[in-house]
Image 1: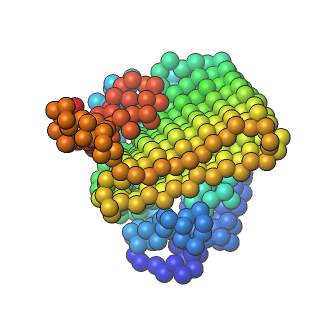
Image 2: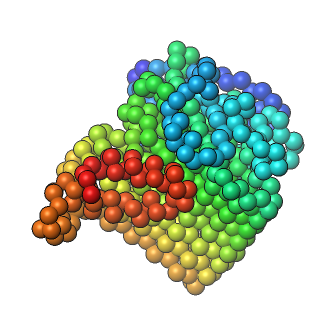
Length: 435
């Protein structure tokens, strides 16, 4: 399928014609109608839109996706062996989705530790929270997910509950003759004084072209502390857009770590609102790219109240014809005095054909703050390489060790040891060398 995108509404019309089911309470029908209006009025972004200037994912989708429908559920999912060793080593509570649909029978839900609820089973007050953090009007792809998802999952961590094992969300994806578009949707509610770690993985069960468009909303209540680790390691035919929105409250912390390795094209939108004093948002990312992989990380941090803190570090190592994009925005409202905000993006290019576009931004309306931002793009330090080779290391080993040291600052942010070791192994294999 090849569409002209001279008008960006053509792709929107194609998806709207899919006419997804609108089961459940009237609130969801209204929310989906609102999302439809956004798509009809705005369409999908082209490179003329500043936020998508370097990532023409709308055209990529139009050129690559033959069928905008959703694939059928994957049968015998319990027999899938992909990542089985990793999942066994983590020893966490598994939460499974099957082509975007929650698999209740295959998911763990220990009574009293946390709750799993399909969106259509929620009570009136819980339903009203869906779509209020990551709103359809925030982004066209958020609107597409809102319009298209057929079932979502709400995870409730009770007040005061400290989960000693991580939640492991595994999204199994496989395109088929019915479609190639998958829409995972999740809402995580962390109650007051709760603590949890969440690992998120996507398993692609074939090499067919597929479009994964996810939305996750995080409500982090007073003095809750949440860590979210996401691994993106698909194949050259995977197209992904992920919209993640979080509201952080008094004395609470959300830490996000995203590791991006393999895909055709990935767009990550991460937005954190720091809505009270003494709350903290930490955002870390590492992208190791080769071939023609394209990864775009857009982050947005909004300091709305005094005495909040944000830390942001994204690092990239790019080879071959790969492309990385980083656009980070920090807003400090006038009322948000005593804000501390740090943002840094560092990149190493291993090829003359690799490209990085980076744009760290600060918008500060308060006068009593500590804020900094910056970016660097360059090549390996030749002096350090020479020093290590002079002490007997091969060129390949010295190069790999320097690159691993560069990447390690992000990997160290992962606190789940089995998952950390698995990510370190992937990075080591990607960088090559023996050290």
